[in-house]
Amino acid sequence: ERGKPLHIFGVTGFPMLYALSYMGIETMDSWTYLVASIYKEYIHPQTLKRVRMRKTGKIPECDCFICKEFGMNDFLGATSVPQAYLAIHNLNIFLREMNLIKESISENNFDDLVNIKSKDNERIKKVCDYAKRHISNKNLQYRITEF
Image (cartoon, rainbow, N blue to C red; front, top):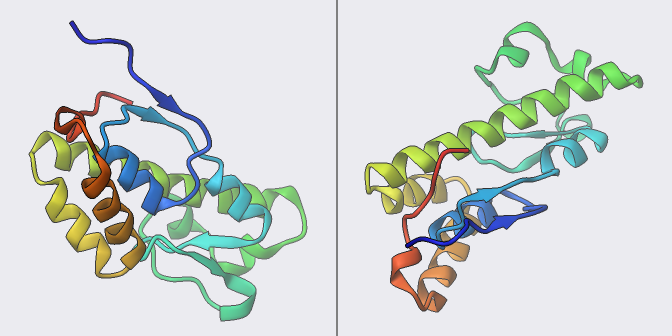
């Protein structure tokens, strides 16, 4: 008989999201998408890193519904509306990654996804390698449920 799933609160960053998924954590939440928006940081859809738009002067290409409708200036205003747009974009990236992880685990190719994502974000590979070395119960690996 299986016990209750373990929920992790406050996952900070995509490398941790991948490592916890590797370890079999079934549910988790994050405020990264919101905190990043407060600092006008856009989560890059490919690298999964936080981009300071004011420093770069541009935003990376993204196909989420928010980015299709709005541009960089819409994300940078001083009111709560631009922050909400940015938070929604960032949340979309988080949810997209959660779905990719879930799908790759169900298809038993999570390691392939980690290798693909690690090309643009080496920290994902580092934390997953760390988890592999330190995981004591191999039955935890590749276990995830509906979100």
